[in-house]
Image (cartoon, rainbow, N blue to C red; front, side, top):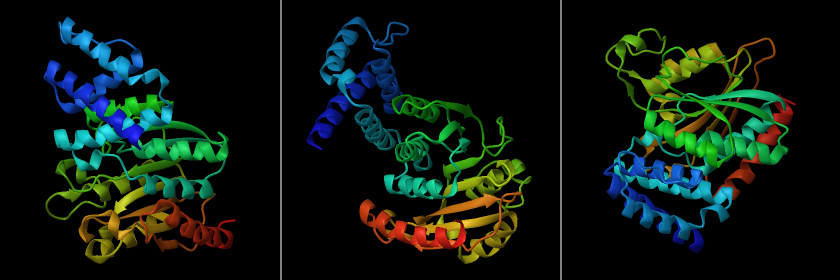
Length: 333
């Protein structure tokens, strides 16, 4: 940890120095810093940064010994610096990295439910890409690359897609990235799998929301409900979705309307409540929702319902795995 902390401080110094010299946001400086380090050349446009600053930056970069860092260390540092960018630039929290425990639970579920073959995987709200990349790396690690993936990410924020692009490069993953409103028609073929931490809040384009069955009767519609409907429309028959959703849509007033609609559209495979301690208050609590689209190869089964009662990854996963195996052997295997 001392090594990571020392490196983090050195990287922060590089980013802040470049931010000052270019007069840009922390996010822009962070993206350019990693572009410089990956290419081995400091980008200069319109005389900025100036020659003196380039010389100083060259020295700072040399002290990082970037070429000697492992891929895992580079990814860890980039993730930590991205979190710092959230504070510095007040980036929308919907677009920030997803906690590691969540990606590990999703990877565990995918390992159980998906066939070992080439799969097209889409994240329609990719943000920085942290969730998708973490899940894919874990699946590749467990299965020694028997899984093959064609990855696609969608987001309507061009700057955030720059984070996702760098993240893919650092993780040695190939991905196609599309800058678009994911609630408009997708510019890609129907995927086998969707993995996403859905944006929470109201969708401002009321005219587009009118096309969805999950639209609000009055005022703005919930973006997360529209996203789920859009995912169902685009998934291949019998395709799977592994998505992080606000717990409020699964119960209460919203759930009373939404869940009956959802159960008619798809086969719900699992609902995993995340630990209360992971969120600041009960209104922010989330769950992992897993469903399978209707299709020839899809049949109904008992829903795997559970709650993670600990944020300690190893402890939570051991308990989850026992329950998951029991459910799988009874309902799927």
